[in-house]
Length: 45
Length: 505
Image (cartoon, rainbow over all chains, first blue to last red):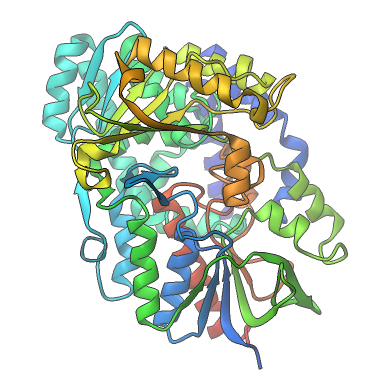
């Protein structure tokens, strides 16, 4: 069950990002990229 | 034995709702508020007979707010005298075109047929997609906690229909709208709403693209001012014994052996409680109101990494005649690309231009009793204002900015404005911070992009201090009156669950 959600989630991530126009995609990913290093720490707040 | 069962820090909508729900469950609840009135951002103040809203100017998704009242045996519409707002809004585009979107979807379709006929198919596809998403989200998303991966999996398992719309969460607001619309003027008319969630269309998560459509579920204004909504919760709570103590600023959270045990006020008074519910900014709560050794380093790093949400300077205008506007809400818009560019090229670099876009909330259009007879109020929500201005300060800039913004509004939107102003007051991010004790004047506490949401937002049930719960914009599902109401219901559900499992005193 968990694998189903994880794989499904990964497909949705790719699908969502793929559907954006290039400038929008660039800004969206840059914003998320700048926060990647904090994700684990934020998960525990 | 503790002084009270539950202490709530902050009498915002979330705090009052949580307090009222727990009072109805038989708990002895005390709510502490630093200001001289309740409501936080959803509040109203009086000046020379004018009742002016501080921040929130309408509410959407009233059904979510009503769920909380229904848990107390009443309804939102019984407790708060609300006035329907129709049309949802009028957009004044950068080229001066005005377009109004009525609440009724058939009427809105007629408007789009006339305004951008080749976008009608896109509107229908957008409406169908977002309607399906909203019905699934209202059913599952709003009231599900998102403390960890397990909660998120349970959320989607409970509401599998949400999976169908999962890609919305991983696209941007702009990305979703561009799937359905190609007309730049229609995109402009739908673009400003991304700032309702605190970010520009390019980086706000795509599920917020439901905002322009969601307004057709009904939007309302509270008669007498937006403070009517928190006062509705306050009244329900007080009927069940809840006490609200104004002008009481909490200085410190008292803890012992990993458990919260009360608070210390600024005047040194200590109040003990079995449970503490925080309705203040979580970053401030954890980093400034706890002893240094309470939280692990990793958690402090996570907290320090959060960026506060945007602040919105407000211009409150009291007028001696009705303004030339169509209804309660008018959006002064920019093309979507410029709406994005404002964020990256002005806001992020500490600039705040005088040529503004934003919202004109003509509150006396909905409720004339807010002002003396024949007089009017417009609360102008301006573009996001950077907390730190480049090379100057808000206090230094305020008089000049106020004059120049009024001049701009007069030239572009409200001819003859200056001759009809009885009173004008500009509230800057720094004023908001002083008034509400909200760090950096943030109106949604923390940013609301993907990596600040759900499991990455501070948990409603503290992981590190037993008996501490969070409500309000700092926690899932985020900022906005219906969402902070949902956060209160989530916290109360978690408290009941913890009690059933014997984890609370």
